[in-house]
Image (cartoon, rainbow, N blue to C red; front, side, top):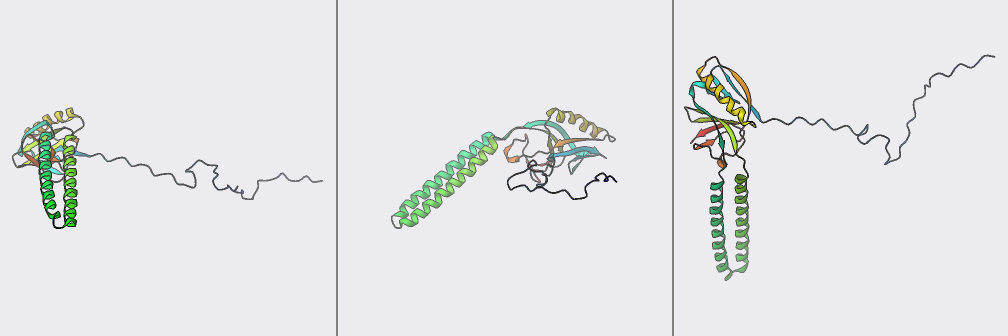
Length: 222
């Protein structure tokens, strides 16, 4: 009597077990939900400061070394006193105009009360909006931090300014830039940070204004 051959591997496809709705055998996010994409690294707001071929490059701006007259570091402080005085002047002006127009509306109410009510609403809504704007501007200056910067003055009407999280890094850059002015063969390349501030909120030591937007390091004398 012949013996039966040993059972071979099953050729039937595996049966899928039905899972009732609301029940899962896998952790959430597996198989049916694709994993979230990797978070890209945040961009660093840095720029290159380098000396090459008798040019000082600050980002995309080039300054001939022979035109540089002074290199120094200093701390820019916010114009808190001026901002407070400006806020008080604006508040006095806004309230004066609002109360003056309120008196006019009161006189108008003797002839047409509905017109007077519309004038009062318009006047005080405008006054409140102007006061809110003034308060926001005031606090933007009062809460602005001091900025330690490296400044490069030229013989023309321009001034380059950069900053760094490490003040000593800026101090150490003064000597290489000065040496590059005296040494035609000198070249170096370092990374610094853009000066992203509102120039109207700071003292610059000299009377200067930034140009080119908040992402630009250029500053022009006034």
